[in-house]
Length: 91
Image (cartoon, rainbow, N blue to C red; front, top):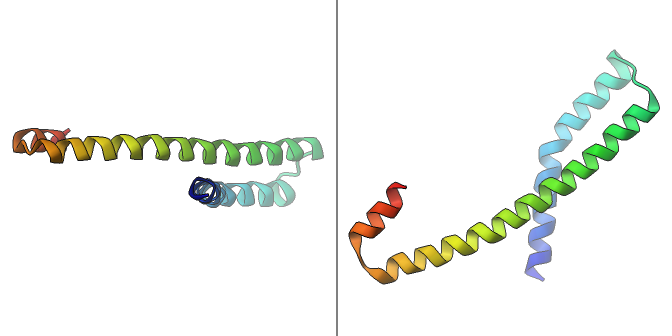
């Protein structure tokens, strides 16, 4: 159940990242430079796909990097070699 919650959180982050651009382009397309309906429809479909793709990317990268980081951190602290810990921190 937690993975589902994390996925919804990542989608929400993607929406908050993309929505300001969508709103600005929509305002400009309706007021300043009128655009045909099919182009605006393509833009909105592309925006939804962008949000979905960005959410999936952030979900996948967060899941993989957190797991790798946890394993690496636990290995470094178990080794108790200060030189190795300092070297890993400098990278």
